[in-house]
Image (cartoon, rainbow, N blue to C red; front, side):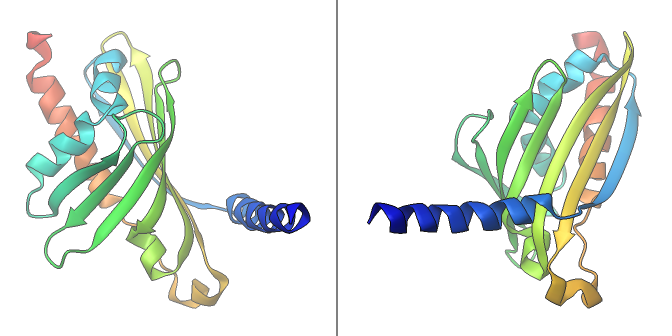
Length: 177
């Protein structure tokens, strides 16, 4: 019995590692913000950017559900998009306050529903000066071999729109800090 469990664990772990080690393609968006990196990170660090983006893009995001967690590692979010009730679920796998990096792994929906085997969303808040930084949004993804001819891609536009929303919100409330 123990050998069977060990074999099953090994097979699952091996397939997971194979998916993680695939050559990943990247879509990246960068936006300069005239606000301190610490203020931008405060918005991105937990659930603030997801909530703010959903509030501002009601025609695109129907709702955001927190399925598990409080915004830290292990938190699961489900985004439901309008129209049509398409959804995307992700889990936060890294939240690094020192580096101002947040990483989420797609679990279902998004480009995973159209032929991608892996989807990883990463936000880096990169300090430029004391009063400015760059919001770098990146989607890393791999395409399943049988879907390569279709060239499925995730959509970086919603992350770019979220960065623009964060910029407007933070720069307009700059004096309130």
